[in-house]
Image 1 (tube, rainbow, N blue to C red):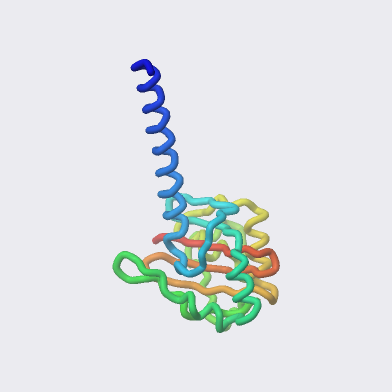
Image 2 (image 1 turned 135 degrees about the horizontal axis):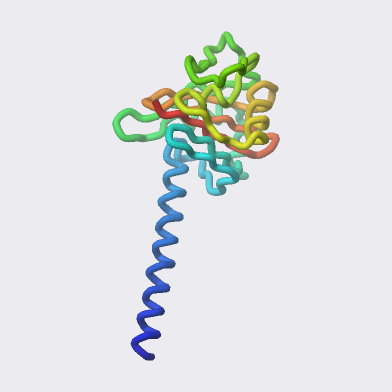
Length: 180
């Protein structure tokens, strides 16, 4: 094999390894705020800004079966996400629809001018410190899940305001965060 062919092969291998490493790092980053036992693999949608994120995952079959069988009791097994310093705690899973008397937390500053919220919205989490650019269809899907029966949600506030919504009907798990 000629020296040029060897160098070309080596360069191709290095580029492929870099892309592979980049994929793994990106995937690890997208799973960082979620309880490890959820076994999430497939990212269906991701919009990550400077201080906001919304990521939609495909709900794994085993998670969907456990949720169907155990409901809230099943979700209690997904309470802690280890982290740097204080871990995220998801120990207060609730059924939807969200009720305002359950302590839903509305943002204090960044609701876009002229927009009034008459019901809980995923933007109450993503738009706390920066305006999210999430797709309108994703926003509608999550807001529908938050405001109708049949889904589950939990919020965490450990340096980052986060929301997880499990939507069994569409087999999706949504992670929304805003970093102040």
